[in-house]
Image (cartoon, rainbow, N blue to C red; front, side):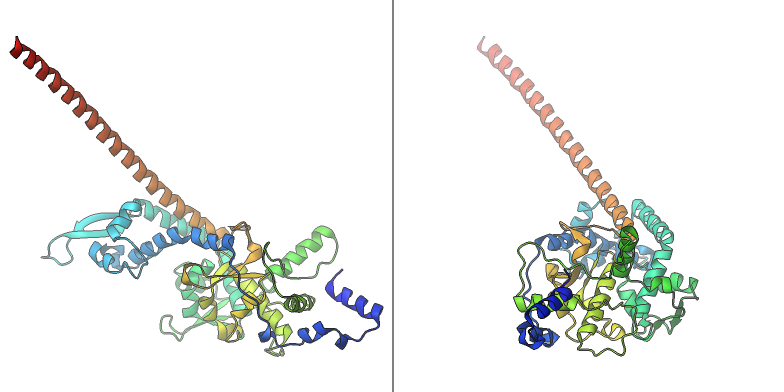
Length: 410
């Protein structure tokens, strides 16, 4: 029985008035007064930890590719080690990850002494070509994502510079504003020059096909499969061992019975502190995380779009208040909002097609590590052979020495 039906049945059966139920006062309480304690979820934290090593490699690759000519002196890169988050010297990092870069000697200035330079390896260049192919194959997905981000915004306009800053979170290519946007003038209008902080991307045409959230599409699919109309609703489930106070549970149950507010609906008429606005905000966060590559986004990045999506100053409390929908990870010293339903045992359930790029990058790293292991194996075999030859040589010397001693005695 749904909570609202149970509520009506209870009132009729007891002839009691709504105000006589203490929890009705809780429903009317200020949303901001609801406090939910944060609890660690090791499996979701591990999902972030698992991506830590390869993302560090990707940062170094990006640093080199952004250099003029995509080359940089080794000692210049060493000076940026702390900013790149490396705990070891650059040379050690390169030794640990062979296959990413080549080292070669060149001069910084015409008459200077030759020094080591770093440049992308042939295998890395092949990966970059493969990355471009994946972007082309998924161009329609990229366009729909970008349209959705604009369609959810207050004025259907988002700062172009902010979009560039979050391109990796949503899987957009580096040339998002240079190549992708100009190809679709029917959808996008770029205002101003990117990089100056005063450029904006404006939605030109509203596409009704894009104006359906993940939750609405899921409800439609369930209705089609069952033949019974399914109401759009959030999946709300806490992992084993998690607990929230009774008054919060009661507030959540009442809130869940409110009609779903699509993140693509016009909500200018809603009070910012109302439960309906809370429903809309949760819907926007759910949709944003669903559009992201890993179904998670650092909270400071979401905060950059407070103006565009009408987030309050205390918007981050939504993630702990609705801890059955979201999880706030503190891993790596950054608060990250994660979508619980997107993970099972710390692994993504429905993977974004653009994650093929990550798979190819991991293959590149694995090839380098395999090459390194093979080289170490050959080196160990050579050392072993040298030791065996030395042992045989020593035995021969001992044998001849014994013969000479015997001859001397005779």
